[in-house]
Length: 85
Image (cartoon, rainbow, N blue to C red; front, side, top):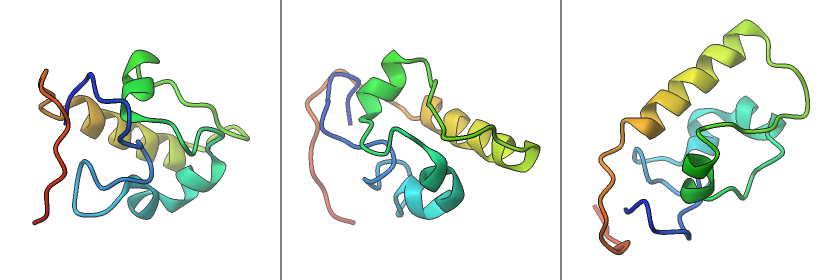
């Protein structure tokens, strides 16, 4: 995946692991106002997502974990490629 790609969905596509982030962090996904946010939008916003309410410490820790995972992804400047494991 590339930083230039704007089709990969942050929550709904399995771009980090074998499962989408909405499956790995279901409560965060439910509370997020930006369910169709692309990875590019997430990066352009420096990881700032909007939620419907304040996140208690346990959910905030999960959010930090997801953000750290996203920013540790090895992005490249090539076109996105669909692949199967």
